[in-house]
Length: 162
Image (cartoon, rainbow, N blue to C red; front, side, top):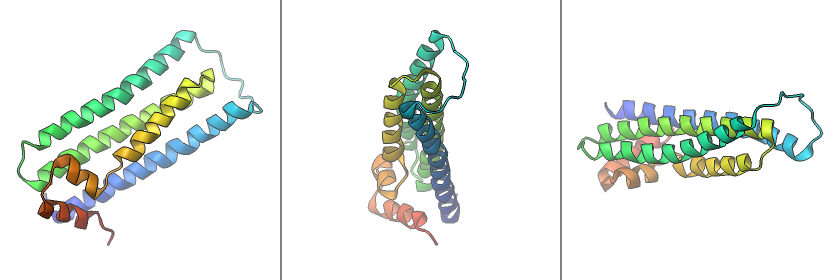
């Protein structure tokens, strides 16, 4: 991978992160407003209670799992000397992490819609925290991959818009 590929992959990752956030935030916001107002009626079917527990357990499990899996994958990057290999591992791990966060946000949105349980609001709030803390930035990449100044500058240059 060369510098141009790094720049392209970084930009692609940024766009993916923004798209996933732009989809999940309004969806949850709409359901949350419905949950708080109670004025809208969707005539949704009654789902069994075990599905509520399953959704909560799955969402919490995925929330913990995305963190653990992300950091395990980052450890693989320490086996490589080449900056581009390290960053490629970071990009793949981050992409997977944000897909997981998106799935968690959808699960919490559906859970809130069907069960009107405040636990889903807490799960979504935690998901938002991870969305903001996990967003790729040059400084975060430098810290997580333990890059030297020269490598960090290459990443910083690749992250700048043209």
